[in-house]
Image 1 (cartoon, rainbow, N blue to C red):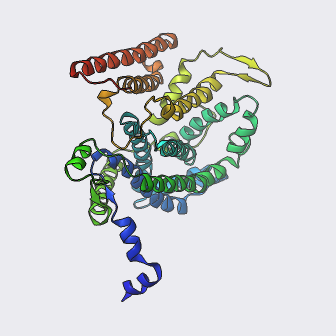
Image 2: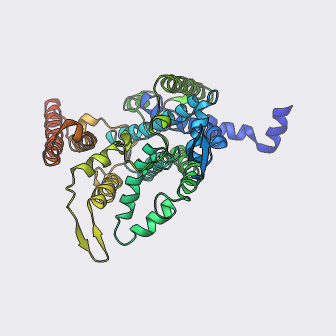
Image 3: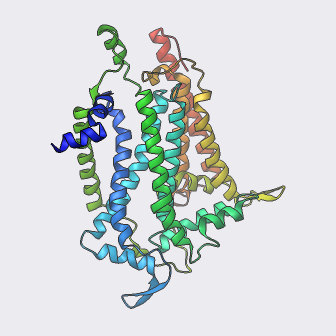
Length: 417
């Protein structure tokens, strides 16, 4: 009776027939997108708990006989609550997992050429999701307001301030004036819990709408199955109930892994670093910002030159031009690929020597930049490390391209880019 009542008003049967019967291809790499989405769900749930207890303020309050910023004190108190620390850790590791999953998902799309026509728009949406996810991590970095988080955020402040022409304006807009100011934490809290989640939800919705319209790329084996079974449009399992059961089982397993990691691996301990102080601790950003940090290490400190209306500094080169150039290259990938035909099946990376070797070289370049963040520990001079980065990148491209060309010649197949 209840279902009939709702069905008469919402036409649930029509919705189920149109959407829940759609086919989902069975390939393990498609779970990378679900991993990112499920991490986002966990972040929202744990973020609601943390947001109810967090105080976005830098006013001084008493904590165990000392005067500390209210935001720092609220995080310490959250850690002292039953389940408080574990939920904060789950929130932290879910953020790490979401960034990694989005990056792995984009990597899979690149190497299987799933960015080709007609899926270029979803490639841009995916890049936007990655950028907003990084922004979510960045805005959450400052909120504990420990010595570690303030020092890390100050690097971003000086980078944004170094942008010619608009640096002062953008830094004041993002950081609510000079950093750190009394309004910086409330500004970051608003962006972290309102603007960024809304942007993520909007891009995820757009991504799913385009995906429903264009459908997934399929595993190459489906091409031969279609020919033998009469050419059905898509081979896989229905969204309801088969794929729903698979997805929920995967989410529960994912949640188990995150809780297990959160139980045994701690965060950056706010109690150890303490509240902000005049001293600057030796610190490095988390892995997802480490390539930018490492690239900054490779730039000579005296490398700067004037431009009309501003000045280009090492912070501008490493923190603005470098990531901006990488973003531009990624955005142009669908247009740099010379293939003209529509792409409905996952391409074999072994049959695409140039694009695959280009991707391998890019991965090695980013990894080497991340290693450059530790040149002080490795006792390597910046100039020498820069040579290592260039050599490793060129070697990765040359070796992978040569091996793939040789592989395709031996198979007697047409080499595709």
